[in-house]
Image (cartoon, rainbow, N blue to C red; front, side, top):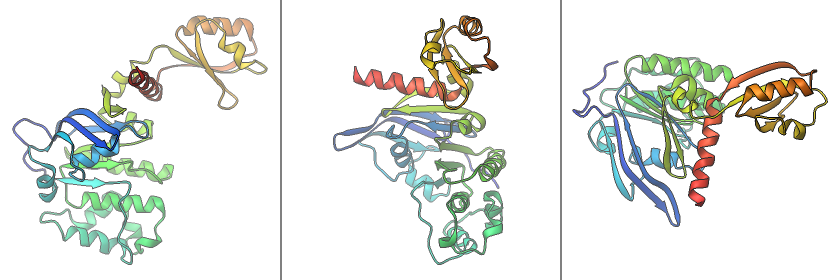
Length: 308
């Protein structure tokens, strides 16, 4: 696999003040984004944040109302036609009545400088289902085939929209192992996901979109550092969760199962008070804010700002 020349300004992706409306809905409101070659970027946001619309504009599937899109210094259509971009979209249907091998070979025939069919199938982990008809595939298997099709152009930029949807845990691990092999060659990846642990583990950089605007852009560690306080997790048999919420230093409580979570702005005070009032508390853990906490705080702050 060989990568192609990059533009003089060093940008693999450049989005400039993108806006897109659908009737009264302002789906994307001035998105600016610069991705350099070789970066693996996670694109996060709640439903309706504008992620898929932004990806559609990046790929040239939807025209922005205003703003610009450049991929490797050229427009999306030119970059796609040159085989520099591979995409795996949620809504991509597979051609029926053909085997997986036939479908991948058919796509390879559409590109001048395609990746060898066997290589694409090996990277995507679909060699064991090469002879299966596409309409017989499970949801997870179909996702892996879409990944193989995205790899076929031997792209410099891979764009993935919820790539591990419908995959079980084992297949998701295999998928990301394949992605590591692909990105080790210096390729650029932009992936949208609802699995925040994937963004934290596999992305060099995390971009959070909410309400059609970018509300955070940095490494996972940088974004997690924006979360105030810590979480105390413990098993507190017989304690009323409302009473726990009134402990000093506690901002909020949750009890998703047998454990109680105390979100704190002063975990030391909260822990001392917890043990004083509930000496039976056990299996205690204290954790700094994670990416999910940061994501929820950023989205909530964005919604409050929009209301104002």
